Length: 384
Ligand code: GAF
Image 1 (tube, helix red, strand yellow):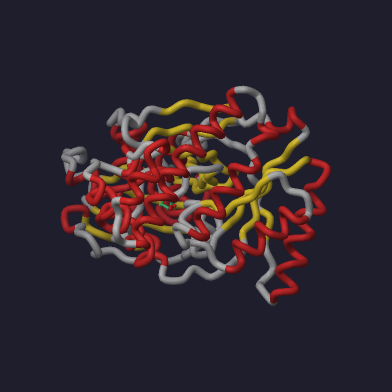
Image 2 (cartoon, rainbow, N blue to C red):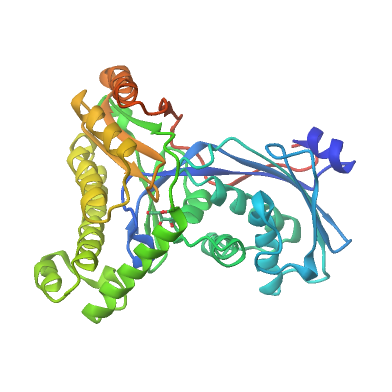
């Protein structure tokens, strides 16, 4: 990274950071309902080389979108003022500026390089936001906590770029630890690392990008947020997190709108499934979580209606080839599936998914490396 930085800007970066993409094991569309999530960090991510300059200008280059340098005056940043990939780092700078954290009006020279496939539901944008937050935090000595850094990264995405989301992806990118999933309570922001030692049980977790084109993602996501808010309002609770599974039938009977009722049912049952999966992993029984993963997919398909034929086909094909459980992961409307399998069945399952896609005339699916990896970390200073 120092080489590409020097090619563009002359000299060395002050710091080099890396932040990963994520895959969510379970807990989908729960994070904007004050609920529970259980993501882990991918070995894929975004690396950023950053140097403070004192020009008051942020200069940004992406190895995936180069060679043009995108420039913006820090003082003039406003939502929508920088578009495309550079909107994410510019949004982070805007957010930190508005929080009063950029005293002395610094600017930054930034080179980013990423390998998280875009549009695969694996949080390439969160990785980009988070690596920039951490690099600036480091250079300026801000001392941001994980949740503070995540709030700034999410703020950049929601308010500057204008894409709605919860906080799961940013927390995962910042706070996951190697070998573990991150159990996050998005209400209290309490976190706990849950070891994902599935290999010890002869199991493996597969990740497959369906390559399905995203459709209407932003509008549909915001629509789901509105339905959940309507459900909470109808039930007189702060968030759907407050609806207990034991009282779900009574709660559903008080919601007149069928669509809102089904959205509520997904969120309440999904939160319970996360807790059950965490309990089984804590007990050393990872071979028993499969049915919960599959139940999550069915709920996302039938009640939350965020799957597409490619996601459903991948899940059915994986289960038909012996997977213990399978589900879509991320926001849906395309993206990836996560599959729990016996290690010995992995190749047959991957082949079965590919064959099912060929039969349906879908673009070939793509296996993605998914070893549980470290959250955001510093790679180095001038020599990094
Ligand atoms: C997307 C969002 F960015 C997350 O916050 C989360 O809501 C997820 O969809 C669904 O669980 O990745």
